[in-house]
Length: 162
Image (tube, rainbow, N blue to C red; front, side):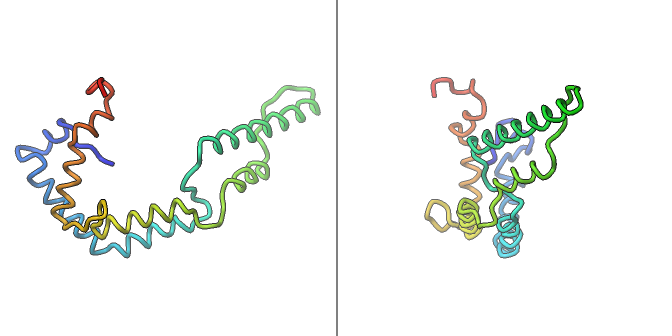
């Protein structure tokens, strides 16, 4: 998920991606593989955290926003009728917490488990069903990061014929 544009590569010095950057990536990946269990444990904390959402679909976000707006409107209109004034007041904390409570489940999210499995595979060097050495993995990542096909998706004007 990172891209190496020509400006970033120019900033790496005369060797570009083949010098210190590549060696640093190899050392970092080696350390990540060595301590993969620790990294996975840290990520699993988020996996089982009931307050952390792995995915909120646009439809669910819209539904939650509409429910929140309706609640705010009803609270504001009832308070303005009671006081005779028009005022905007936030929804009560119990209402907003019930809306959040609907969207958060205590069950383990299946998408989060798939992401964790993908992370485990990457830390083991499995990429596209192939076991890779550290050097091969770093070369593949650099190649993807400098690929014109991936870079053109960042800037619409680079390849308008796509």
